[in-house]
Image (cartoon, rainbow, N blue to C red; front, top):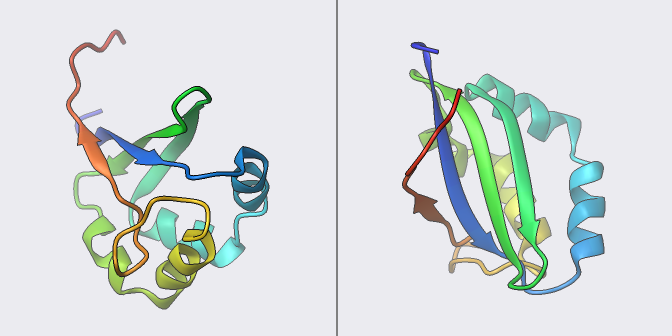
Length: 106
């Protein structure tokens, strides 16, 4: 996949696994469109139930627009919506730790 790249990252859930899942099951159509227009596809988030760690994995186009998402009102509204159940920064963006790939089997 020469025109895309895979990234992985970790976030932290403070509480309410069920609520986190419910909110994502009901992901707003305009947020889905925003993510797709930013070049994101095949995006999944996995929960380590013991630690509350959330692991996100996504594919994005090499010419993605992810860096601009923080400036979009829909993204900011989503961050505000999720801030009560996740560890967040002062601007309510999720605290994210990028993960380095150590192995990949295609």
